[in-house]
Image (cartoon, rainbow over all chains, first blue to last red; front, side, top):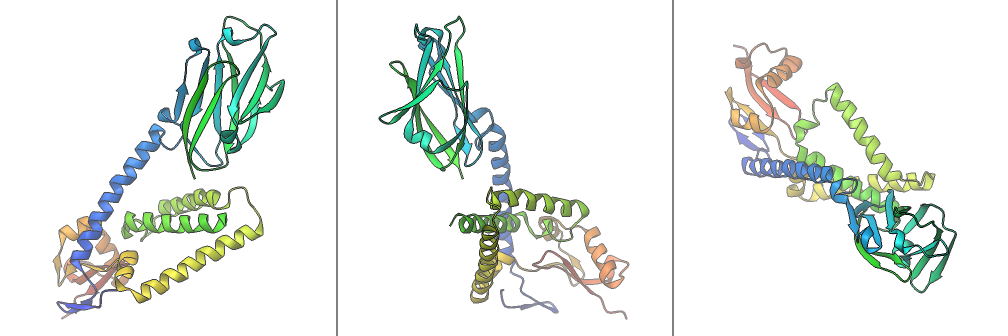
Length: 171
Length: 149
């Protein structure tokens, strides 16, 4: 502590310059806290309007919905929406997911369950049964991130369009 | 390794937030403040422990928190500047009977707080019976009464 000085009749470690600086720092911090809360409401830390990203469109065959901002050990979701035209004549559709990206997650569930899954170089391929109709089919992956930081993901249809996306995973 | 990093991050984060919130936010705890502290501890506990409920994890977290606390106290002992930054300094809000309204506003203290402390500590009835009032580094208010003639 600042060594006590005599102020009038009292000995006290008062330092008005330091006090002014500390008040200023406090006010700046309060504004910052407000901004952080505001950013969190918008979804900058996951789970809000800014947190959801999409890549591609159903018209072009494949639309990926992903969490742009998510958190370590939280729940994250990736949804692939596949246009009916992409379903093969034998009622199968094959979706691949970037293997390195998938390695950074625990897969909690895939809906619907894939008929089979396999490896293809740096991709994991999931094959689903699907009947071609007028509406696109949706496949949901519920994931739990295991690594934090920036992650580059990718998914696509085997022999079809490819979608790349970027995620920020907070610790 | 994870437990030590988590505990250190939580310690430093809480230190920063509570210091920047100002002493008045945590001193003179009301019932609601007490409830707030319980909620904060509950929120932090989840992040500290995650899904590892082992006794090893609990021990590591406790050792890390206490260890950092000891290190901080040693650091404060060596450096006055660090002590000022971490603990804050006392501030005269009534100096020889003169009220420093600007200081009181910035410290979020009003005359009622000063009178409450004066009543509580010395049974003082009026503001003019107070010689000095100090907001201590801990956030509490100390009163030096005027000597009775």
